[in-house]
Image: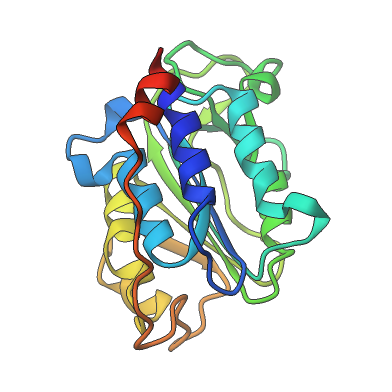
Length: 233
């Protein structure tokens, strides 16, 4: 948990391009490969010029803090990427969407979902503030649910205008973010078509890439060892 603080501080200290911001929240036990863990995915965003916040095993309050950074200072970012990888639940009788749950495997019901997670409708509304576009990634895993809920993020229609949502199995979503989604010149639709196990919704324009062709990576400065030691103490 304390490592998340180091990740946020160091990633925000790196240069960003055209005011890009991103958030990654991952349940650490889900990822079997190091390159798909939260720290590695945050670094992927950082190398593409994003100010990135998040981490693994986050509480609901920590996830809200990370999302708050997406519109820090009251000004929206030009471009947003949000990756939520873990347990989702939704109320089948509600049109307002579902919730992304904080780390843990305890059952949740309709009464407690809002306290134990973040409302996807709010995430989608934040995404609409980005004038150059936003991509929301929902990596789903199974989990127990209580009364009034069903597993998963629920229907993605209708979505607010101007945002792209991609959902599917947790590992496949993480691989998409670590791979072609942020590759220069690669259209979001092309990256999505290469992974038939994923579903896309919302704004899906052929040829529209998140990162311009030919753009160089931003150098990532590794964290000083004394900073990590102090955060873990």
